[in-house]
Image 1 (cartoon, helix red, strand yellow):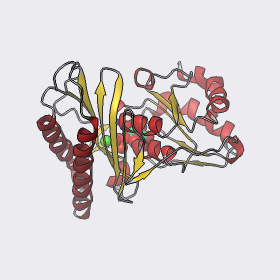
Image 2 (cartoon, protein in one colour; image 1 turned 120 degrees about the vertical axis):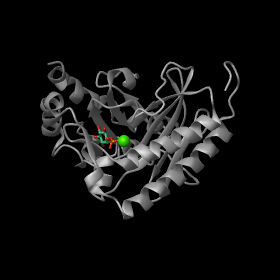
Image 3 (cartoon, helix red, strand yellow; image 1 turned 45 degrees about the horizontal axis):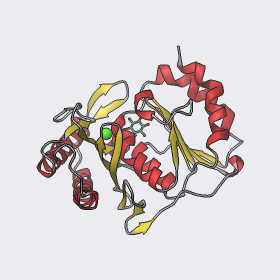
Image 4 (cartoon, helix red, strand yellow; image 1 turned 180 degrees about the vertical axis):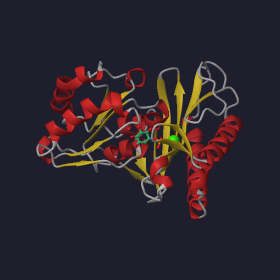
Length: 273
Ligand code: IPD
Ligand code: CA
């Protein structure tokens, strides 16, 4: 992948789709004989297993073959090299806690980034064998079907996903106020436990929004372009489009964004302590 070269995003996306599906099948196969004694703890309630690490190593090897010049930003740190013009942003297993407990959703998430711009994203959700994908200049897909965000513009009817990050002490005051503000004022609140898949659910029109702070780039990179190409919107809790630096993700169908943003902004000072 030389500097200035025009990338064949169609071809690369096809390769990444094949990889994500095969790694998803690997995760499912490993789950059948999963050994909970081999789970390690990275931080408070933040776990990693040998399956995450093995899967990441295999993904990095394949992506490196595909584009030897590209760097890597990966959840488990394999081949970490973040300063390249092009970087793969990889979560080999998003929803690790769900996986450990044999619960869904959990998924493989792979994106290609050119500096700050995401060029392509692929998410394979293993529980329902759902492949979400999109690249710059094209539509977003679930398997072979084009997807769009919902038209729901009424907050009272909106189905909202929340994420509770591992940094509980820092996030809890904000999260509790957001829940207090929304509970009873929206169509439903849900916690699913796999950020990458949940962004795709907004893209597919199943949910209207998702809110989480202290999020990693691997959790949102692929989902961000899938959501964008499906007509959605993603900002931080102040309304700025760069979620990656802020490590805050407020994703929506666009239609309820401003109204919900006011709720987030009214509690944002709780994140500053
Ligand atoms: C986590 C999941 C979870 C979100 C956490 C993420 P992991 O990723 O996406 O839904 O709330 O903030 O870190 O650890 O399962 O890959
Ligand atoms: Ca992960």
